[in-house]
Image 1 (cartoon, helix red, strand yellow):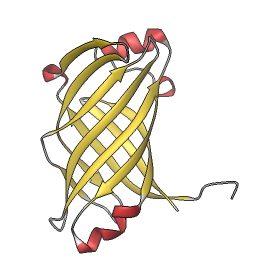
Image 2 (spheres, rainbow, N blue to C red; image 1 turned 120 degrees about the horizontal axis):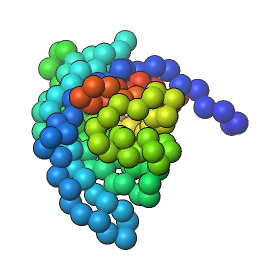
Image 3 (cartoon, rainbow, N blue to C red; image 1 turned 90 degrees about the vertical axis):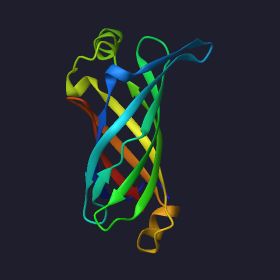
Image 4 (cartoon, rainbow, N blue to C red; image 1 turned 180 degrees about the vertical axis):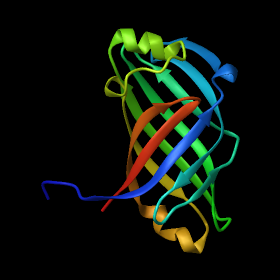
Length: 154
């Protein structure tokens, strides 16, 4: 196989409480921050609902131009199924834009290069197909959070 096939799964918008972000500190791995996820929504042809408060992004700033993300949230579908979503990925941009991003400023969409690998887990029979699925997310900055287009890898 020389290429990947994908199909659109859902558009995920996360609301992030940047004011409550906790700076864990700097280690040899980078500078760790934890940003609370306070809610959000997701909508797609097979997956729609809202994001429950209580998740977070365990972000790791590595150098002046990149940040690794490690996000864990609980989704509640329109039909009340609960789904655990976790994703890891990387934001890459230039040092000047990363400085602006760290101050909470919105940077140009073309400078915001955020890609993730998503995994889902649920006990809901109607969504069992998510348990073995791997997804790829393409993120964009939004006021108060981030928006991802998530694609199922076929």
